[in-house]
Each structure stands twice: as structure tokens, then as C-alpha cells.
Image 1 (cartoon, protein in one colour):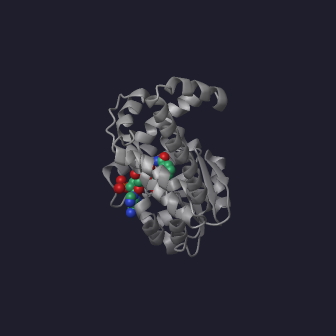
Image 2: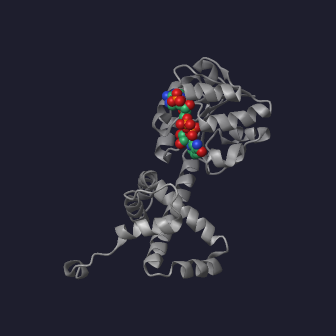
Image 3: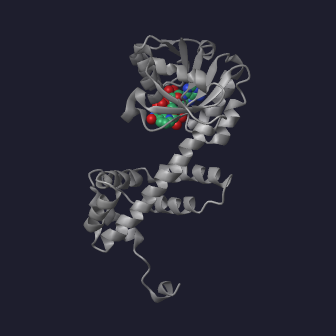
Length: 282
Ligand SMILES: NC(=O)c1ccc[n+]([C@@H]2O[C@H](COP(=O)([O-])OP(=O)(O)OC[C@H]3O[C@@H](n4cnc5c(N)ncnc54)[C@H](OP(=O)(O)O)[C@@H]3O)[C@@H](O)[C@H]2O)c1
């Protein structure tokens, strides 16, 4: 079994290292790549070959950056005879565009459910499309792939629907806890929620509060993609509200050592309701 990686950053390094441990032949092309990429490939012990050799591997995995995902599929397109897996964070419509270039091979759309840095090579990867079953054979070599959905774009759609839910919950938690904080009821609210929502509520909430504010700009951009996807099937009400919360959070400078109470204090100023009569009568 030979696996070729297009792009060799964090994702490729993590997956390739595990595949090599399990005896898989892994290659990439380092032509024109940065010193970081060359270093990662060297550390993983992955061979540097011409691009055409990467494209002719049994399974070709594109793990570049979202902006160049379609271009990478286009360049590989006519050479691929095996399976081409697009692992980039792109919207279902973009996945379908990438798939259109894989004329002679089988295409699979793959979505990594979480972060490879935190979860390692065992991170759940969901896959859809004609090549998904063949891609799943890499489970024999230490990966954790599940086939879900039928068409290219389905895996990406599932990931975006999850994103719609988790980001919506984070925005709701922000407004709920911030109001509780301003009312002086924050600790009582958390304790009551621990009773109704489960003992891990406090820990998961603190983590959501922190990551939402730290990554507010990126979350806002990701919600725009979610909104466009939902608009293809419903008239969504939630994305614009969720985006508004992240937009406000993005305006706050967060000291790296701030605990969640500091975060609520910092945010409180941004959310105070208008006080003058004109605003009250609105
Ligand atoms: N990291 C995660 O946990 C995670 C989770 C979910 C999804 N993803 C998705 O997986 C993909 C890879 O993520 P990553 O974290 O591994 O990214 P990364 O560390 O930034 O690595 C990107 C790699 O792609 C290479 N590259 C860029 N443009 C290229 C091109 N035109 N042709 C060939 N190689 C090119 C880069 O090379 P240079 O260094 O030379 O630019 C680098 O080796 C992204 O699309 C991301 O959205 C990542």
C-alpha cells in the first residue's frame, strides 16, 4: 500500500507518522515547499518524490490549505488512478468542484472531526463519496475513518452541521453566563446547570468561553460558510445571531492569562444595554 500526501503540514505529519509505523509506504513532493514542510517530512521519514509519483499512489491525500484545495485537485486530476481524498476544511460546494477534476480515479470527501494536534492520528475522520470505502482501508494501519453519507460533500456537510450546533451553543452560553455575571448570579447559575446539564458543565463551559473569545474572528468566518450552506436548504434564523456574538467577542483584547471570570468582566462593557431614553423607548 502506497499513500501520497499533497501538502505536508500538521495533518500529513500526524497521519503519515502513524501509517509509516504500521508499514505503509508514504511519499510526498517537496518541490517548492517551505522549510517547515521539508522539516516535517524529514522528521516523519517520508520520501520526497516528483509530484506525478505522489498522484499515482494507491491513495492520494490532499491536506493543503482550504484556499488551494481546488487547485491541488486540478493539478492531480488527470494522473490519479486510485483514490483521491480531499481532507481540507472546505464547504460542500467546493468539495464538489474539487471532485470534478478527478476523472479517472475515485474521489472521497473527508472531514477531520477535531484537531490532530490534540487527538493524534486516531482522530475521527468521516468520509463520503465513491472512494470512501477504499480510503477506509487505512483503518488497518491505525487511522479512524468512518463512512457517512453517499455523495462527495456529505462529510463536509456533516462537519458544518456540527459546527452550526457547537458554535450556536457557545454563543448562547456566552450570553447566558454574561447576563448571569452582570446580575451577580454567575456561580448560582453554573451550579444549577451542573445539576440539570451534568457535572461536566462547568469545565466544558469554561473551555467554550475561552476558545470562543480567543478564536472569535475565525469562528465568525466559519459561521459565514455555515450560513451559506444552511441557506441552500432552509431560511436559517440562528447563524446571523451566532455571528453577531462572535463579532462582538472579536473586539475584545484578551490577556493570555485571563481566567473565565476576567473574560466575563472584559466582555460586560461591550454588552451593556443602552441607557438613554431614546434607546429605552426603541
Ligand atoms: N490541523 C488540523 O487539526 C485540521 C483539522 C481539520 C481540518 N484540517 C484541514 O486539513 C488541511 C491541512 O491542515 P494542516 O493543519 O496540516 O495545515 P498546515 O500545517 O498549514 O499545512 C499545509 C501544508 O500544505 C502545503 N501547501 C500549501 N499550498 C500547497 C500547494 N499549492 N501544493 C502543495 N502543498 C501546498 C504547505 O506547504 P508550505 O509549508 O510550503 O506552504 C503545508 O505543507 C487544511 O485544509 C485544514 O483545513 C486540519
